[in-house]
Length: 266
Image (tube, rainbow, N blue to C red; front, top):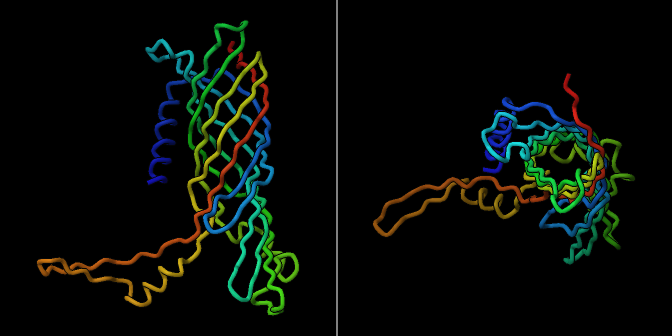
């Protein structure tokens, strides 16, 4: 459902832009907290990074009093996302697992925005709100994954991607999906040509595929189907589908500073 919603949003926004025109362009750079929200691992943020440029379209042909306030923004960003993680296994033998993901993506956002000049302040003071989907493509990334079990020296239990692994085991996109789809929701303030933005970058796609142990056991025991009989004696068969136990998605809160210029028309 999330994938369908995102695809439809892209199609609608791109269709609307056909009746618009370029009015301004700009660039911004920002930092913030980035983490991967996984239910199984304790996580903490890393320093996220955003840098990119964009162009704004105005809906000049709209028969609407707010036509001068509504815009569509298409951009291209280079972003850094990731997380640190930790997992403690309390059963014997007791183990601790820790590591991090540092991933770099090329991001294409398509944002629908509303820009409003603040009447109580001098001219050229604006506030704006925006929301829209993003497509992220992984460029490169680093993974550190280490598990230590005191008193148990077997390499099948103890490992470190920077010691026991090869150079490929440290490349994060060999372990996780390279493509991600998300949504950006943000608010901004503009003073003359300077812009200041605070936005939430929320990913939708689980970044890895991990087998659900209980789900796999149920499939093995039942052969993948379950027969149900109701009170009237009718039987139905239900197919047990494979379930992904990994829920981690990219999350970030970013603050950016930028500069914006109008596009001159001759």
